[in-house]
Image (cartoon, rainbow, N blue to C red):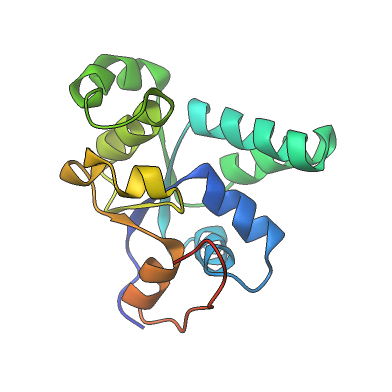
Amino acid sequence: MKRIAYKLYLDTNVYVLGRKLEKSNSRIILDLAKTGLVTVIISDILVSEVKEVFARLYGREIGKYARFYVESLPNRRKVSALEIAGERRKYASLVRNEDLDHLTTAKIGGADYFISTDSDFIESDAKEVVKILTPRRFVELIGIKSYDTPHEE
C-alpha cells in the first residue's frame, strides 16, 4: 500500500454508499478515515447534507448518528461557513450551484482528492481546481484491492 497521508473531501454519496454497502470502496475509505489514516475535510454544509440524506433514507435517529459520525472522525479539518462564503464566487462558473460549496470547501481545505460518485461533478470543470476520483480509483491509487461495486467506478 502506498503512503496514506492524504487529505480527502468525501462527497455525501461516499458516506451513503459506505454505510449501505459493507463491501464497497466507499466503506474502505470511511474505514481509513475512522482510523485516522486519512484527513477528511468537512464543513457544516456537508455535515448538514449528510444528516438530511441519512434521515430521509433511514430515519431521523440515523440522521443524527450520521452527523455525529462525520463530526467525530479523528483527523478532520473543518472549513467554516465564513471561509466558504468568502471564496465560493471564485468557483461559481465551474459547477452546479448545489456543488459549489462542496468544491469551495475542498479547495480551501487543501484536499488532495475530491472523492465522489456523482458523474455530473466528475465531468464538470471542477477538475481545474481539485483532483476528482471515484472511490474505486482512490482505493486502487493507494494500493488496496478494490471492490467491483456499482456506482463506484
